[in-house]
Length: 371
Image 1 (cartoon, helix red, strand yellow):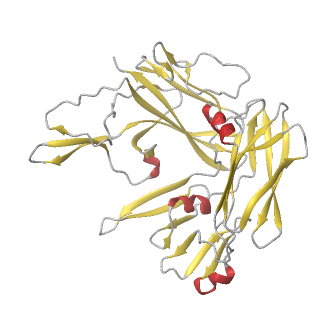
Image 2 (cartoon, rainbow, N blue to C red; image 1 turned 45 degrees about the vertical axis):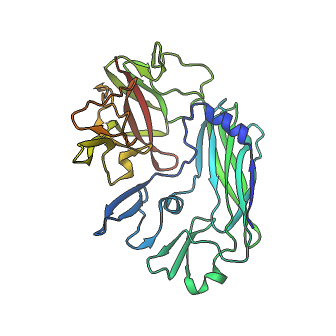
């Protein structure tokens, strides 16, 4: 029987209501690309762009959530901003771990607090599920607490796989007012008994974010909400609020903080098309174009990207995708009646976390007022 244990929902909701600059997962990005077979089924390949490790559905029975877990690298160093309550990191258990416990730091200047956890405790006697399997199903694989990939023959799964389908994750907040390097430890309680103590180095700086500033037309696009004071000069439009502008063009400038290296800046716009749904009635819908890579997707939208130079003057995009993906029918020759208040330009910044040796991406949006 499964048991669910949750804490800190209110605290987590409050934390997430603030602009989250650092994502809750810090593993290197796993790129998902796909192609279609003769029957039209998508065959996905997952790849860690930093290590080059990959897994393909041509060879294995695996899906994206498991691929992210298996191919992702364990976080060893974390840079945070002093005085910020937004420094939250997610920790996920592996198949051989019952739960994590006792997150701690011997230096009392760093406060370590689990603000949310979800534990699914199912300590049954049957073997746990595999992270992925060979195509013929005869070999099972799982990632263990040390990050190693363990293979098990299907015939021995009942004895060699960890018992019970436990799952757990923990959102942990790190807070300090003092700059310095701290060592955080936590215990992984193993299903087979015993524990493994894990550690993480936390580096606290005046500004621990990757970006010192991201500006469009001299106005801040990147809102570093961890700063002790409001930096001001944020992109703002009367009657619309922050992140919105009526300036159709301006220079886009990115300044990185130490320990982070800028690799690439791209601007993007929604990629849409009009599809006929009924030739007799000349009906059509607006939809997003098809793609074969997760790099061209953002929040379920297909985005067309173009690389630009740092400091270049850009023109904001005017593609109005307000009806895209809604399935609303129009007769051919009709104009689309909906006009959104704003159109979106997407800014994607690819950078290198030099402390962890990982490539990461963050996306910001700028809204242009439609008048």
